[in-house]
Length: 179
Image 1 (tube, helix red, strand yellow):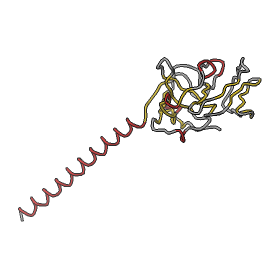
Image 2 (cartoon, one colour):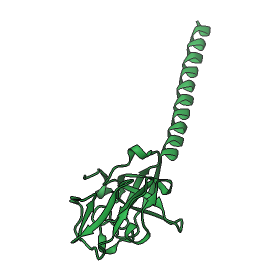
Image 3 (cartoon, one colour):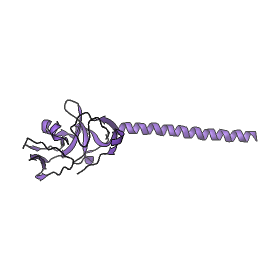
Image 4 (cartoon, one colour):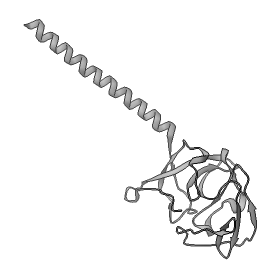
């Protein structure tokens, strides 16, 4: 009888130990997946106000392909100086961008931008976007250094797509494409 009790205790300990080990392995694998897929950033400038305010923190999905990118998405990218920036995709590969009385015109059609509060375009220049390029603009146009200054960016410069604001806690929200 004592042997039977010891055998049951031994089996219980083995089961508990197995559960702890499997849980630990799953936790480590989950953390590795998160680190490989997502990256946190902090907004320091006002170029994306009102969508993203200075000092808000956000999560970027680093695992994206060209087919994941749509006009209206907010992405992070490396500038030529290697500084990481984040702006909204306005122009897609092979499109023509023009500014007309404060509005963006893409391939001859005015773009509806419900997220814009302040329009500011002093240029009537037409930009032809290359086959592997994207035209980026900040939502706070008067205070944004974007593709109007340094031209379109290439897909290779893109780090990921902004998906979530997580701080401050009262501002937690998913970032959805408004277009």
